[in-house]
Image 1 (spheres, rainbow, N blue to C red):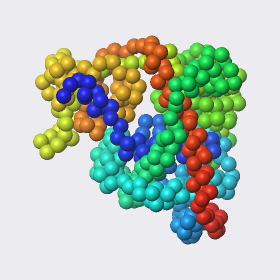
Image 2: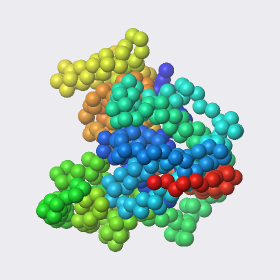
Image 3: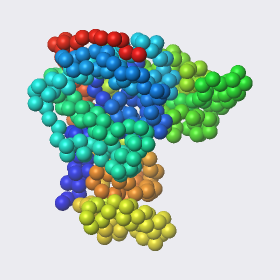
Image 4: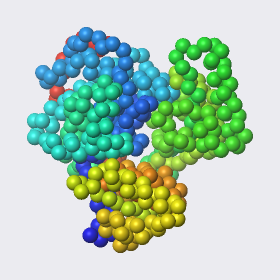
Length: 473
């Protein structure tokens, strides 16, 4: 097995996992944003991406009301409890990001429509023979567990502790896989991109014409959370705290350090970054406060249902514009494959010992890799060569990206075994013309897929017989 074949092996992203964890439903922008958020204590479905069916953390809250049917889709019922569970999760997620939550009855209606669309698509998948094996669901469950740094048994216990039924979790995973399979099958041909389309995109980008991509922004935030029923004295104290953070940010203090000192945003990144995205994917409150600010500008404190926000504009760029350069990382690893001869716990313990020996100067990483690593890169001292974003499976890439050059991570469990990772160096590499065209091809394909999905979803919804009963509560 050659070094390059390992890289391909490690880069594999099985369709079952991508299908289970990808969110491709078209929903109102406000709800689409809410889908990407992760409440405190939630298990992660994927780095930066989660679906409603995979929102594992937290109980849905409150005592369940007596259940009843709110709608029927081709003779299949949708119950009030289904809508209520989705509603409570969405409200929680939106509040935590400072988004304005619409009236409950309006949000419940939007979510009911979303469930109706999903149900109609699942029924179409069944009619057309789309199937998912038990082993595929097992792989998806295992991937969720590994993404959350736990075993499958630990995942079961965590779900039970949160009051969630494991069989329902598996059913939700299966549905996500089925939905994505039927969507890909129906829409793949409609999303093909020709060379002329790439040429046209590049011409429009250069000229800045009507077809040029829209602006995207990257914001970082400090959230000083305000508890429910806070007293006037508490409110004043927290506002003063947020004001101090804003003043220090404007005076030039490193924003990432201020995030660590002041912010208690649940599930946020350590430096407060919220990611490069279109303005409509941010709360309207954030967009209005920052739209006229230059890069480096600070806004706030802003008051929302979650608390006081201080925002910094980190980046503004044209959406979809292919970058001239790409960040690459050169890393090496030691891989121990688990099985009957080596348990996961034993592999973690062995690699933890390797890390201690390396840190103490008693062993050399490359020498240990050559002797112990069960991967084709072992002959090269574990060196994986230069790799850009998306080259490795998410759990490996996330851990690698969190390392400084020279740093060795704690042992990481992935679908391939247990890894000890060290980052050697990083660089920015200029993309070739061919590589830039491939980036554009991917951007255009994603856009065409979204447009095709919107039309197809409407068609499927239109063919379904939907009977509304009692409104959800």
